[in-house]
Length: 317
Image (cartoon, rainbow, N blue to C red):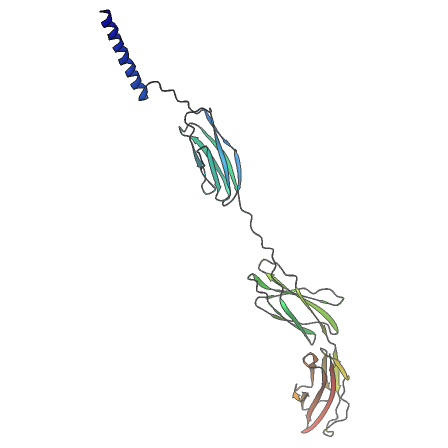
């Protein structure tokens, strides 16, 4: 009887142990309790970025360290300012600048009970400032005429070239107020210059931002004006007495002004055989003449009679 009781107790114990093993295997018994998250913090708490593409990294720190579920969800208050996504693990937040302004990046625990944030400031990207001047105008030229100078040049090929700025300074004098010639102009006449004076002209290329090149310079001298008063005898022989005369040599670039003392019915002046003005007075721009000997002639009519007179002069370099 005693033996049978021992066998029965052994069977009951075996059944109890088997049941305990089954319960332990399916997790319904013996399972440790979860450790909840007590708090979360984000480092750094502030982040400054430059707009469009700059990025930074945030780290979420869970307390206690043995919390059962440390997963974090990252959100942004303004995706137009800064976006955020998880890094290699959810505790890392990757922030990317989108536009200038301020946004708040928030880290939230899975249970939604704990949050921490970082204030992000995105600065506007620095504007690129153009400080590069265009190339200088090429091949500057200056041709002096009667108290004026005709300038010419070749514009640079820079895409932002807008025009040129011209300044000029007489020898020993002060510079004149610059003037501008807009693209595509390649010439300009400067008038009102003083006879017998040398000038230096500087032509600078200017772009749309106002950047100016160092300038290309050219110098030229303005000649003096020589006056010629012609005296002829009305109704004299075909060739009047030789009272018409000019200095034997005139510097190239000087002006020769001429007039006839008497009054005729008509006038025709000739320079080197080519008809010139038909008035009582006129002028010659010697800058247009080649160096060497030239002839000035007058054919005048009075009461149907022709009177002529001529003289020669030399233009020097």
